[in-house]
Image 1 (cartoon, helix red, strand yellow):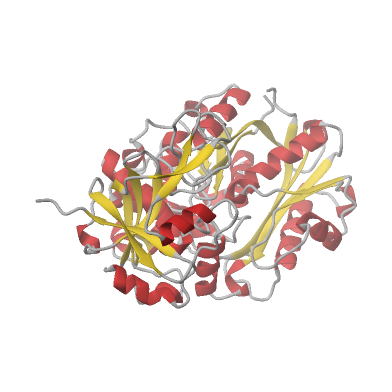
Image 2: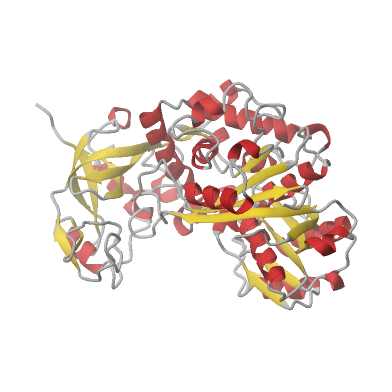
Amino acid sequence: MTAEALAKVAADRPLPVPDAATGPYWEAARGERLVIPRCDDCGHYHFYPRTLCPQCSSPRLKWTQVSGSGTVYSFTIIHRAPSAAFATAVPYVVAAVKLAEGPHLMTNIVGAAPDAVRIGMPVKVVFQKFSGEITLPMFEPVETA
Amino acid sequence: MANLRAAIAGIGESRVGRVPDRSALQLQTDAAQAALADAGLKISDIDGLLTTPVRVEHWNMPCGIVAHHLGVRAKYLSTVDIAGASGCGMIHQAAMAIGSGQCETVLCVAGQNLLTHSTRASAVKSMAEGGSAHSQFEVPYGPLVPSLYALVAQRHMHEYGTTPEQMAEVAVTLRRHASMNPNAHKRELITINDVLNSKKIASPLHILDCAIVSDGAAAAIVTSAERARDLKKKPVHLLGQGYGCRHSHIGDTELTTTGAVDAGAAAFKSAGLKPADMDFAQIYDCFTITVIVELEDLGFCKKGEGGHFVEGGRIGIGGELPVTTHGGLLSAGHPGLGGGFFHVLEAVRQLRGEAGERQVKDAGVALVHGNGGVISIHCTLILGGAAA
């Protein structure tokens, strides 16, 4: 399904409520940039955000812009919506994407028919605005020549 | 870690399925009274109480609510919340409380009216938005609980060639077990084609790959091995236990290997036993793929071979390793956090030789495994009919 179709379900879609720990992520997304924490001490990237580096326990973490490139690590085509907010969107794809920098995240795959999504498919981030405050990073297949 | 010299002396279940005439506390009371009768004990013999949170109502301090409701004068009480692993966790934590000398006889009880308290749709919505998915980084993308496990299943199929038919075989086998369990919620036999043709929920999972939603409660009484010897029923001993947790949410993990590796290894080590010693295994089965991944992680087969392992009747009663012989969350009943507790009760029945039509021959030692979150937090017990 398209990002536009997913956006139609925005009315009562459960949107994130940024907090002290995640504010910079959502602020960057609003500016169409994907950022994840990177450790100043060991250089390790991680996501979802923690307060200590999962590799070396350092608290010296910095939100760092990443390429937005990755591959589909796993996916599922949702046929049964979790709530009325998503009922008109089915079938849609929820995926785990492995970023080029290493960490995984959950997202929707847009810009492709659900049946065309495959594990290992190269994808890149796109941004879909849902409110003045919230823009969700989603991923679409990379055009291959 | 040596075994804690504790034993399960009584078990009881409420009616399971659709039980609209009982509240959560009434269901728990029914289960507790059945367990007391089974052990030949009275409420006044109980001096410790463990329970879990319920989903359908907000209880501040659930253990206090339940202890007061039942009239238990507890020297020790606590609320155990390791999600679906809470049933196993309560047994071990009761054993620790008894082993420390804090109390002598602990009632563990959990359950609720998950099915009739609300609609199925609202249960699905509240579990999707308030349960296992990350509120900021997952819920906005519209996952429901089955879709989180579907990511595991899809990746497992990709890496190891596991098939929808193999997953379906888990559902078919557990339904056959439930058909022999008079208190099971769903008892009509199903076929592999029934599973594959059932409603698609989140590919590759169909509705018959998913746990059911039920009303019901379960209870067990844990006491010292010495005291258990003098009670009505043959004691079932806690021989070992382990815990594991490698992730909290599923979206940022490798998906196909879990903390069950650590929980299982620790449990076998503390019991001085190995997977091949188990006469049957009560594996947590919130989804069909869960059973396949956990059989691998617990060491019953190699990583990637779980799909093959569940084929050909191997996990059925009479097979090489009977799994979840009461019918599990897929068929016997799933009232939320108490769901995995029924796996413990069934192990006790089998080890006593009281499982009737579904009795596993010469059942002497069993593994019980619970998991919570999205295959996130794990607790494994090894139980035996004789003290180690």
